[in-house]
Length: 162
Image (cartoon, rainbow, N blue to C red; front, side, top):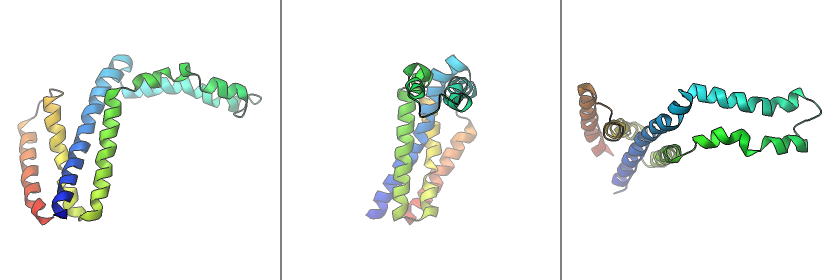
């Protein structure tokens, strides 16, 4: 009975780990691409805005990190509005599903063999492929579908060993 519960938890973990890339891709297309082009440009722009703020006390000695002026300036919302503007439901959902998937995976390792359980997590490729096809309207090649069928067959052979 415990082995079937572990199997269910590993499958849930694989599905959650397969879902979170979908949310990140959607987040990228909604928030990053229209405003910055690439994630690299986004990071550069935020870095160029915040770097002078946080390195200023090193350059300008009298206004150090312990000064009241620095702390009042450092935590003004205006300096971080670009970062807060990037946080939305896609990002939060992606982070939450990824963390839940990995936590369930780590907890399930306590009750099963790593070699067997790790093989079952290959189902995350299937979850990502199916959700990408249905939600993001991505195309699946015949090789990807064949790969998914082979993964399902392999998991079906391994699952009874739990």
